[in-house]
Image (tube, rainbow, N blue to C red; front, side, top):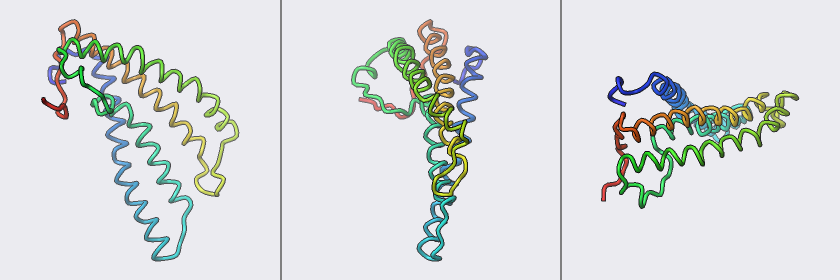
Amino acid sequence: MNNNTLEPWLLRWLDGLTEGVGRAVAWLVIIMMVVQFAVVVMRYFLGVNSIVMQESVMYMHAAVFMLGAAWTLKRDGHVRVDIFYRRLTARGRAWVDFLGTLLLLIPVSLFIAVSSFQYVRSSWVIMERSPDGGIPGVFLLKTLILAMVGLLLVQAVAQLIRQLLIICGKLPNVPHGHEEVI
């Protein structure tokens, strides 16, 4: 937001956390492309196969999507069917976003956390490894599920604060650059 005097410190801190994780994870896309290119060159031109390198691409891919979900939410980058939404006032959109966060995002995130906790825990108990002899950290890969939930919940709190400030008229609703104008 442009007007830092209107934003509470908690909102700035939560958004900053999401932004920092998102920007850091975004760099994995470049690294992932380089490693994938190396895997292809090694396999088809040098006749060398590396399970660890192949799995590292999968791990990076998972990290980008799982750890980047909250950043995408913060930037309003998720798919939205906004036939009616775009015609609403700033307060109306804030109410839709507030209720969507409260009634959909938070419950679904908590459901994912509860339903996957034992899955992740059991992987940690046995320190699950790759069955193909690759990266010995499958338990870390599975932990991304809970990390995603944690980051989504952090961003959900930020969204709730932001929408309440907009509803109360204490923060302007700044439209995102990707909105379609009709």
